[in-house]
Image 1 (cartoon, one colour):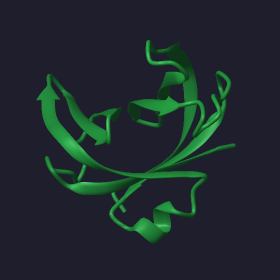
Image 2 (cartoon, one colour):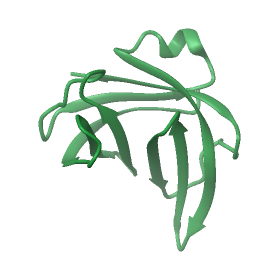
Image 3 (cartoon, helix red, strand yellow):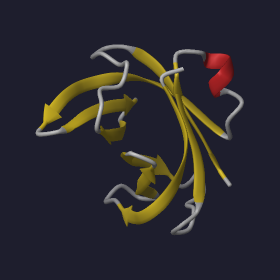
Image 4 (tube, helix red, strand yellow):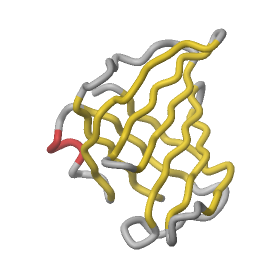
Length: 116
């Protein structure tokens, strides 16, 4: 398992693509932006709790309400923050953390989430 935490929705942005939105999440020391489609994952409310899991194990991911496979697009360091970008076949996940995650460009991962 690469990452597994409970996060809180801080902000929701509607994107130009119909029914697509971006969640801004805070998860302990990590912040995350996740793009999702409303037909697949109903839009949660502000301050909702979301369990997020990034793993290499498909079966573990399938335990979540939403599970998608994707690839790490890039990893970079900007000042004291490590930034990881994951593409879920077009929808992006951007993770900002104080330490580097165990992810490298072109790693295949599974991204799962459950809205509580």
